[in-house]
Amino acid sequence: MAASAETETPRQRYRTQVQNEIKKHAWEQIATEGTSALSLNAIAKRMGMSGPALYRYFANRDELITELIRDAYQSLADTIHAAAVDAADIRSLAQAMRTWALDDPQRYLLIYGTPVPGYRAPEDTTRIAMEIMAALLDAAGAEGLGAMPPSPLQGRLQAHLADHRGWAGAHPAKPATLHRALVFWTRLHGVLSLEVAGHFSGMGFDPAELYAAEVEAVTGL
Amino acid sequence: MAASAETETPRQRYRTQVQNEIKKHAWEQIATEGTSALSLNAIAKRMGMSGPALYRYFANRDELITELIRDAYQSLADTIHAAAVDAADIRSLAQAMRTWALDDPQRYLLIYGTPVPGYRAPEDTTRIAMEIMAALLDAAGAEGLGAMPPSPLQGRLQAHLADHRGWAGAHPAKPATLHRALVFWTRLHGVLSLEVAGHFSGMGFDPAELYAAEVEAVTGL
DNA sequence: TGTACATCAGTGAACGCGCGTTCACTGATGTAC
DNA sequence: TGTACATCAGTGAACGCGCGTTCACTGATGTAC
Image (cartoon, rainbow over all chains, first blue to last red; front, side):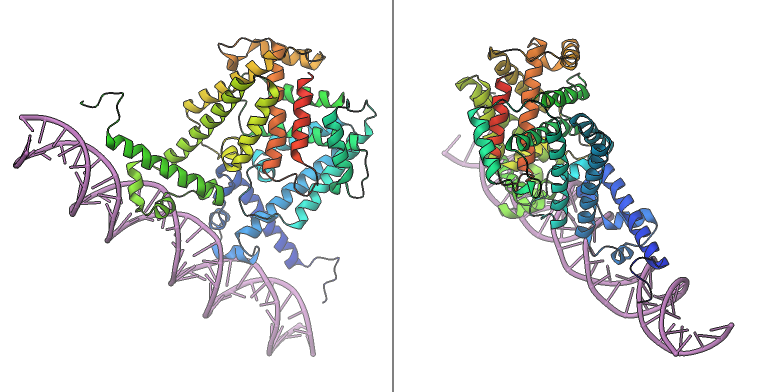
């Protein structure tokens, strides 16, 4: 009880420090061997510790992975927030996301890649995911450009969105804005996910150009 | 030498039959446990065979996975070809791809999901991937619609594509058509990959509507 | 048609491996009086 | 300031497990004469 909530005891500091070191090695392992090969024993070995020692810091393997996913989400959210503060337009936001993804493809893939069947993301991460969408909405709404060209289908989608925009939460937005944000989001991921998975290699063009073109296309909506 | 190249001996027939059964069980396992959990021993057990028996049919685990990837690619190529024959417009092609993907998400993800670091796809599959792009090009070129609205960036991209359109191969196409095909491809994957990974769940709208809207948007290009 | 031989599917035992995880323990660090 | 106790990091041995893969083998099926 001597330690207040604000000041950190040396033990606590050491604890979080080792915890971070474990995560750092976990990321390295994910980058080189893939997420499925992530192993507590291997991490311990690389840190010069015995395997069971890690159980002081994470209850089990799943908890470590969950923590990594949480960190990945948070990192993306921070990146997008920072970009939105600098300049709340769609271009800079898109660039920030691309840089973030290519900077560490496995981190991107941990979130947006193949999900392992049966794994349930903690409440926590979906909250962060909503934060990201909210930032997106801001950027999509800030651009005072022409509305989406109306079409019967888009009309239906917009009505649909107007009905159940659960993820907009406290962020009410016009259906057209919601649609713009969604389209923005999916198009970026379309290019990014294919690029990160190497599906453009051998096609002889620069994915950055395609990405930029897609961003411009959304700008015109 | 008695067996000609055309007629199949009973043994050969049995062989391919068992081989297919192994693959069938492999797909089931992938669907329920994920690709990383695919195990020869587990497949053998489910087939009522001993583990080593499978080595009569596949040299090792990697060869089985490679074969599954090849089959997945071929299945997608066939689906797209069939759709292109029925009606060579972009809409039906997009619908075919979506159905194919949602029909067996793990099959889709085996191709377009997280790649395992270090795994090198065989020459074979990249050939099929090019076939798919060729079918796409046909569909993109057949639509006699307005060209992409020119912009400096798109101009640069088109020049880039005109220079190195390696994947177009014997399929020469105008840069605008190439760009259209690429955009088509990436936008569909943008919606599909996010949907398949469950990133729309809880957002309260129907991904099918978004998908259809994206198809219509490409139609107008 | 029958016999001798070759081919090949499948088995069971065995290998080494690395995994996640538990447990009883040592030794260092912090806390209370 | 010193002593007694509690907390906690880390170790090493051990568990059971399932994996991929090799090997010597049995028995059935096909082939050649």
